[in-house]
Length: 333
Ligand SMILES: *[C@@H]1O[C@H](CO)[C@@H](O)[C@H](O)[C@H]1NC(C)=O
Ligand SMILES: *[C@@H]1O[C@H](CO)[C@@H](O)[C@H](O)[C@H]1NC(C)=O
Ligand SMILES: *[C@@H]1O[C@H](CO)[C@@H](O)[C@H](O)[C@H]1NC(C)=O
Ligand SMILES: *[C@@H]1O[C@H](CO)[C@@H](O)[C@H](O)[C@H]1NC(C)=O
Ligand SMILES: [Zn+2]
Image 1 (cartoon, rainbow, N blue to C red):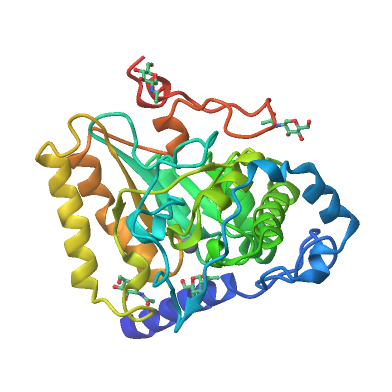
Image 2: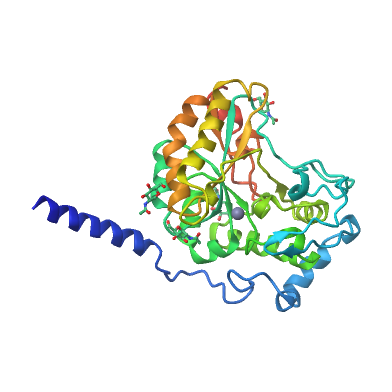
């Protein structure tokens, strides 16, 4: 009897989880006015009137003339790149202070001491409701870096992030290595991801994170003209690379989280805090996030989204949407 009940319960859960990922119809139409979902924009996308207008709105004299990089055997090729890192190429030496004039430095740390900057990349995900429920139960906001194509596929999930008070930033349309794209390609990846978020959520983000951290001064200059601040990280959980999707064991990912928890306990962030890379990518990454959250909370004085780290009280271009300052969020006012 009990095992029958268990079986029915288990089947029900499986059903609920799998139903989450069944495509559904929505009022949002991405069949025109956007690149093909999950495809890197091509000339067809660059040759539209809309895109030409955006392209002409950029002051290209402010964008450094840097050759796009190549991907060779699945990895960025740096074999001919000067060791002096002239373009502040993050993928090469984790540079976050641009060399080209007029560019803002990347946001790579949370300036507040003993503070964990909470960020999740690659959403929204079709199965994230349990994860978002967990954050809500803990009254915890985070910064979510959304892929435009996932917003197109899962608009209800994207809307929930805004409703729950998370900060939404851009994570490109199709998740490429941005320094490998032409100027048009970089612009289209940012512009259409931002447009998708505005269409579905009604807000225009002012921040973005390059997939794989792959950014240089050319890409930064284009992002900056779209009013998108570049946000990197200084601690990487490597959760995205966990088995079965990746190649590291859950124990290895736990060891990363454990060392970051220890850093919170041993004063590593006594003067300024961290920004931690985690992912809203699959069951494994979301489960690890939930599992480690209590220890992170007790090891760090504050766990906050990046807007809060920076006292950004207007996180979107729309001025009627406000966000708490650090003092307001943490109740230290
Ligand atoms: C969302 O998560 C599920 C598992 O929880 C995974 O199978 C799926 O690939 C993810 N979707 C995306 C677009 O990452
Ligand atoms: C989800 O991930 C957690 C943590 O790795 C694992 O223990 C659990 O078995 C996974 N669940 C499913 C349904 O894959
Ligand atoms: C945020 O505001 C607090 C005062 O409430 C201040 O101490 C802190 O330096 C500010 N942080 C930033 C990054 O501006
Ligand atoms: C902000 O204004 C827009 C219309 O201008 C409206 O659709 C939106 O609901 C408003 N948001 C908030 C949080 O008040
Ligand atoms: Zn990503």
